[in-house]
Image (cartoon, rainbow, N blue to C red; front, side):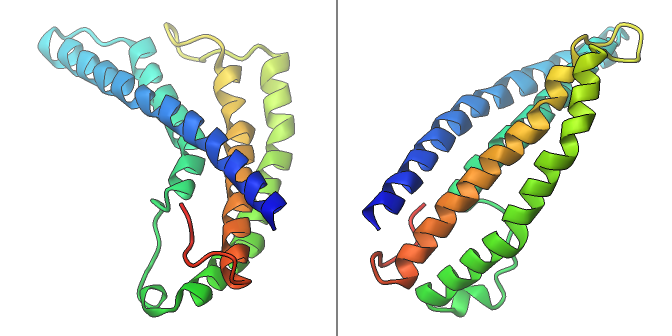
Length: 174
């Protein structure tokens, strides 16, 4: 069990560092949006590249930051029944949910996005809009990367839940 705990801690450390790093992109995104709004509405000068940068940043923040949200248990959950359950029952629900939904869905996205991304890289895909951003293929590469991080964090969460179920931990660690 100590080996599993070390794996979980290693995955957590990776997603903690990546999540904190990606969190700085939110500041950059806010500055980009503020700049875009001031230029568009204050000076009547829109810029397609700036607008695309907004959604590129949002996509990276969402895709790469999702595993960090899962680690912090900050994802959306309907807690009508869940909150009244014991820690072990919560651990069972979380572990089953991970293996029934999160792991298969992540694997499907990683696998099915492969051709999409390979095609984008082969074409050196750029924005179809005049004045748009180059290297759209790098943004598309964030799709499998984000889901690999979610898959890894799901495994970490499952390990933590297993430790609670077998009585090696008292509460689900975050």
